[in-house]
Length: 463
Ligand code: URP
Ligand code: ZN
Ligand code: ZN
Image (cartoon, rainbow, N blue to C red; front, side):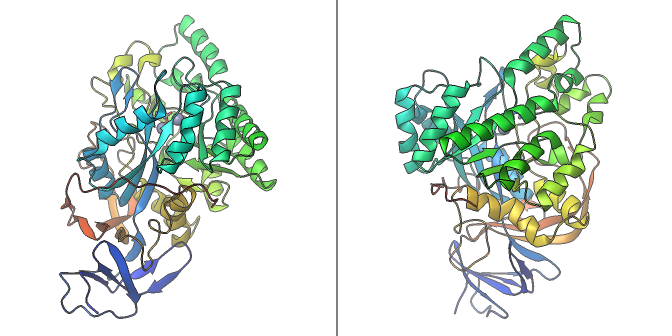
């Protein structure tokens, strides 16, 4: 038995098991897991003593190279996948946007071009639908067959992305027919718009009003409506970037009734709060994204949601805009601040710190939340999302005791600030592999831009 790479002396942690074992890799696949594997002839031997050997992270919610709010998100598929890899994430699912009047295929082709030759790790796409005539309804099945098996719809951003209930219901019915999954941005965009216009008329234009004009009730109402529409359509629904207890309660109630409702939250809602928006001057703009930051007490509710499976995963909603020049576009009016925040790099360290070191869940649950759950729900399992013979060798050697302080001075995202500046984390990847190739080692990127492959995802089969 000869391996290209052997990872020795580590503890393999999957979503279900923990065991001391070596991992042997041949080509781009894991080919053996055993107590002692031979190293003769191996090109590379990695010593994982004191570390966990885990599947690479899967981030199902990123916006790389995305035009939005009059500008474009600051990371492209090269800088974004490299920053993700530094943090132990080896697969992304990004969003291809269909603009009004376009076919869904146009969106898919455009985003395939953006990623091609740039992505350093593997990637897949959801399709954002903004215009659903009969022709696009017909196209949904074709996209699912090509591996784009999920669609994001918006209940917010009237006039830009927002769809009405009839269109949402049609899209859900069509997704159900083709075993696709609907991802929902759940905020009541109509009501929010009225509140926003009132605030502007009263001269309330600073960044904090972005948060104060988007109440938790608007998120809870839309979450409840999305679930009701999905139930009527006989479709599963996945609520993206859930931020508050009010919406969490709607998901919990539906799941208790056996409804196929799923939800993610993001590190910003677990670690930051409305207080961050009181940063001096215009700095609150660094935290302008939707849904907005909430009062601090919601954080523990979200952590408990992750522990109790009301929430099934943590994604980042990475949508970076530089403070200088991009966020500054809204200096005199919060509605002109491009919505989004950078987070692709620190998801694993943050979730491990708060979740495992915080005593809220086990390392196995951590793997489920950042890798296995995303792989299963979004049709990538067992190729991705686990350490098993035959799976892609997307493997991280994770040191559970490595401490660092997050800072824009040391991060690898192409953005001039960090949302998590100064936060101390414990637990970080030391070695990161993508399909058998080491991409991060000794705190350096040693992979290749363009080596990432597009992943055709399977249809929805549950979690
Ligand atoms: O503010 C955000 N979340 N920007 C990205 C787009 C979205 O709604 O996910
Ligand atoms: Zn959204
Ligand atoms: Zn998003």
